[in-house]
Length: 139
Image 1 (cartoon, rainbow, N blue to C red):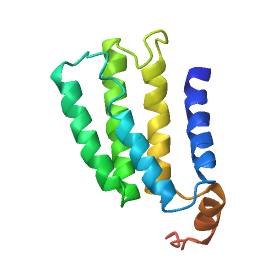
Image 2 (image 1 turned 90 degrees about the horizontal axis):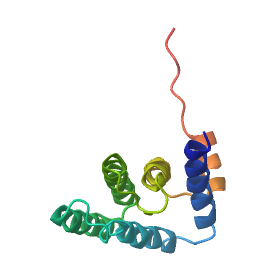
Image 3 (image 1 turned 90 degrees about the vertical axis):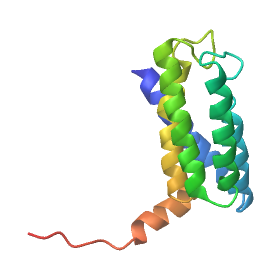
Image 4 (image 1 turned 60 degrees about the vertical axis):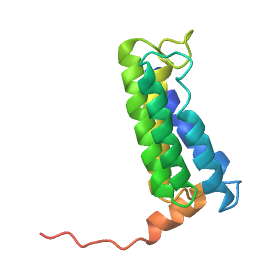
């Protein structure tokens, strides 16, 4: 059970820690980090030249993320898919940790959701959620 909960906690800590980085540096730093995450599996080479192609795609999407939280979120979702493929193939991110790619595949979409919400700090997210317009339910 912990192998499913810990990655979510890590993603929440990630968002909380980045609250201390002011904008626009927060967005730019996240774009650089997700660009680097695109190359995380290269040394394993489980998918041959596709590893390099994936890194190129991630670099392009991360570059677009320098100006857009949406592209950073897309990059994290792309990385999630790559994590799933590696986990299914039995080629984990950290070779000595069998479920490391699974953990990454759980963590990354949570980070992506945070990015799609504009990479706001936790306090900003609470204010945003509390003040957003609500649609009346039809009965």
